Length: 132
Image 1 (cartoon, rainbow, N blue to C red):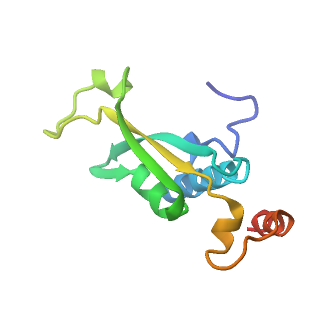
Image 2: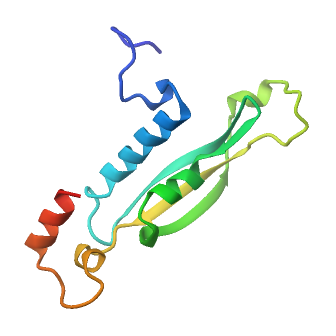
Image 3: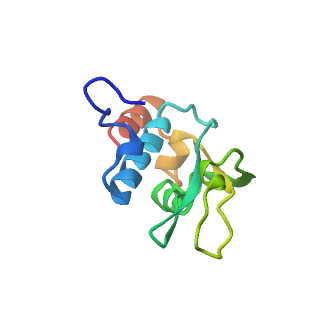
């Protein structure tokens, strides 16, 4: 589907490179984080890609780029109605028929900012996170 006047610059399906895609996807996830209450969940559903003989596992890239202490779980689920299922490929490798549900839990702000000592007052913690 084409938009009048061209594609939107935030449309991740139109990225010029894999690096641009990962950078924009990371920004999207990091924007979910402050919108999530402490103890709440944020995440992504994402699949792997094999293109030009290169296999990319984007869930692995996201795990490295996001707060390690907030990773909650990685679920692997079957991917249905895959468009590439009707195509013939010269590779003998199995088709990619799965995707990942990657979930993080927003830890309490005070605990994330200070592991030792008294809890940080919520107004101070908010200012710190807002400028993060």
